[in-house]
Structures are given as structure tokens and as C-alpha cells.
View (cartoon, rainbow, N blue to C red):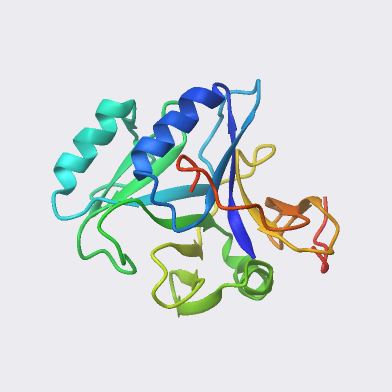
Length: 214
């Protein structure tokens, strides 16, 4: 099952604090786990997080900027959401009311993995059994998984995918009791983590190969 997101961080304490406050501790039960790295971010991430802006989305964007976020331009143009970056440059989106698939007014509402068009069908087959989440929507833009139909956080995958330049800075983490633990590659070459058992409830601030058994 999907248990969380692993995020490389130059300053683990600062990043934990930022994301705890950015999500208001609302992560749908997913753990945000920060691991130290000495490598700065380079290029657009393939995996990013979406937060709900809520009815007063402009105030929510201002709040996030006050926490240390910055506005980001990734070529999105005129879109009905705001693209920001966390203190280490990781892109994330603030979704406005009425955005498709948003089931909450605050906190984390989507984990988005960019995938190449040629990997779409393989990824749509690969991820449901590894997350324990079901496909609730499949459209031309991609597909969406949820733990249950009412779960506030969805896992969204679709093209295009940024060119891969080294190891992904944000990675999915899954639990497979009795299976081999470690880091593996999905059907599109993206790293993900497997732990042997699901961790306990996250604290307030946390909310290779294609191995068929991973």
C-alpha cells in the first residue's frame, strides 16, 4: 500500500517545518519523510504535490509565500491554479475551488507523477496493486487513483514527463510486508521505495529494475 512520499532535502529541519505548516498536517494519512542530501535540485521534478487553495485561495497562496514558498514558472501559462516552489525549489500547485478531483478545502489533495505517453498503459497496470489504491478516473489527460472513493488525497499520473536527469528528488513509498525492501524502478524508470511493513501513524508533521514482487 502507498504509505507516503520520500523527499530529498538539503535542510531536513527547515523542509519538515515548511511542509507541516503548508499542509496544516493534513496529508490523508500519508507520511512525508525527508532524507538528507548534499545535492541541490536541478531541473523540473517528475513528482510534485498539490494543495487545496480552498474558498479563499488567494489568502492561502499568500500564507504559503509567507512560509517561505516562492512563485515558479514552469511554462504553465494561464491556468486555474498557482504554481509555487518550496524553500528548496520543489514545485507544487495550489488548486482553486472547483478544480476536478479536489475533495477537501485544505491540505494535501493530490500526489502527481508525470509519466511519458508511451508508459501510460504500463504505469496504469503497475501502480494500483503496489499502492492498494483503485483507479477512479481514466481520461485522455491521464488517470487518478484513490485509497477509497472519498479519500481526500488522490494519486494522479499523466503525460508529459520531464526529461529524467538523475535520481528523482521526490519518490513514492509503499509497504509490502514479507517482500524485499529497498529502492526499485517503476514501469517508467522512476525510483520508489518499498518498506517491509507499514509504519505506525505519522507524527503531526508527516502526514534499477521493475520488480514484480516489489
